[in-house]
Amino acid sequence: MNKPRCAWPMNDALMIEYHDYEWGVPVHDDRKLFEFMALDAFQAGLSWSTILKRRENFRVAFDNFELEKIAGYDQTKINELLQDAGIIRNKAKVNATVKNAKAFLVVQKEFGTFDRYIWQFIGNQPIVNKWETMAEIPAKSVEAEAMSVDLKKRGFSFVGPTICYAFMQAAGMVNDHEVGCYRYSELT
Image (tube, rainbow, N blue to C red):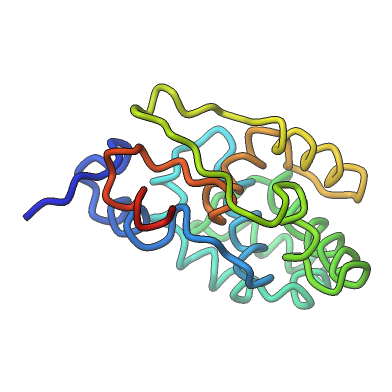
């Protein structure tokens, strides 16, 4: 029996799995938060489906998103990544991932965890929206704009308000499941 779900996964099995088990689920693990931040940056200008299809390749290429390793990447490793056909070979995005790993480590040092820092933008509780259709879901929010400004001040790249909002959705900081979706009530 098909469960009522948001319209955006359509009939794509990978998107349905992501929707049903990850999207909108609150994340408090720093490695996972960094993975979402990196993948959302790579998504800029592309579909989420494109990123999901390459997700395992990204995990392999970026050492399972281990911050210390990524922060230590040298130009040789960056050049290697730019030759990896399994990921998005965008020089600015690859460089931003390395830069963001370094900035992420600084935030961890200051706040104890990145989780403690990032969840403060929403008062440490997921925002529960009440969208009836996909068309109502915004591309950004006031909270995403504040997050973007602060992340940029801290040296992060590819963290505009739209990317920050997508990150918030992925990390469960907002519940943007449509109210008719079975996951909406499960995550509320």
